[in-house]
Length: 489
Ligand code: ADP
Ligand code: GLC
Image (cartoon, rainbow, N blue to C red; front, side, top):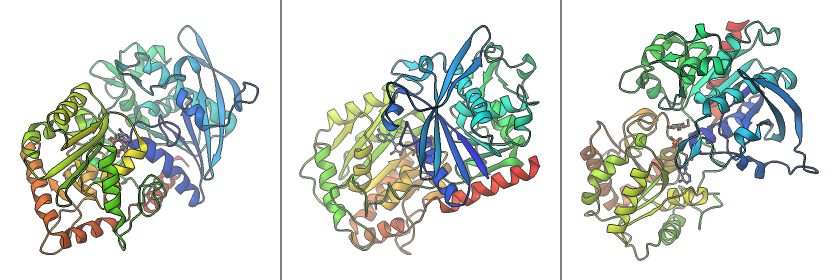
């Protein structure tokens, strides 16, 4: 089967979060199952370093020019051939006026105001490109940035003979980001006005990209079973619970896998030493290397190193950490945090580190290699998310013998089992409720467990033995595609 992936992020080309990891690692796994997969991405400035250098100033265009019409003007896009990797074909939508910038979605000052145009164009460009490069049986689109593909297919392109047998699958990686724009977006993107109703793309008098995708896709998936249930409720549905509940029969939760070629402490090239369940010795060296990288020296073995790697977004629950920050530093812990994002959280971490030098250290930037070091060198990994569709870092942590301390929500709840010291079962520590004291309590349970070195090793090994590879999720996606193909005839 031929599947086209359309997304705004993909490792190694462009990444702000876990979406990129998933779009980077699922396609090669589908290829292993015998499918043909093509991935379309915008040609952002940062992508260029990853593709073949231009020959005489010319990018390797697969298509030189496609006209994308807007209300009173046209844009002309090219499709750059990114070649094949791991059996997957990559194409990049080249529209320098819209994509040739460093930020994927915006700058420090906020989102680009014309994101409606950037991703509206991207969706239409993918459809037009496939008409020349190969129409798939399935368009698998990800998040709001690609969610208009099913909308265009079933409206503006509904009579196009080339797409009569194409089905669509939309994966919701995060219902908190929906792409809200003013009503006029409808006509700016050349949709008929009858699309702007509450049962289609309208949401609180706005044009909502994600909602359109939810209405018009054949099947919907999200990235854990628990989140698939949660988003049908008012607490987690971000005001889309109505349509999600209505489409419950077509909504499947498929837990993300991880790419163990990138995330395995036995082979990880970013680490000072390697380790595995059979030989944990290298973890000590990784811990020393991590502390050094954060300017923290002379930390006793009995002190627990707590790691954080995250986008600093409200979703991630760092307001809970702020609430217990003073209490936490009374414990025998050091904290190392790597992340960037909302100024309020960057400020909190900076202040916290400033007030607790030698015990709390933060680096406010994006650093892939350091993220690996934090997983490998920490004893515990903190993810107190308010909601978490899947979460990848806690799954990496399991493999790296860093016990996850998580809020029991979404994929965090699905992947982490509470440690039971008596039975020696479990992989981490969980708390329920939107309550900072629950978090502190979970950390305290982890600290008690950490004192007993023998049972702590058991806990580490329990986590390291878990297999969250892509083989199983890829089969589940393939089953979804097959169901859609059957429906479409
Ligand atoms: P989300 O997609 O909501 O940000 P995930 O846990 O699914 O959460 O994925 C986050 C991904 O982004 C992980 O691969 C993580 O290592 C990476 N990441 C987040 N912040 C940083 C950072 N500051 N430096 C390096 N990697 C980061
Ligand atoms: C989103 C979610 C995260 C998930 C990732 C990949 O960014 O916030 O929980 O792991 O997408 O699916």
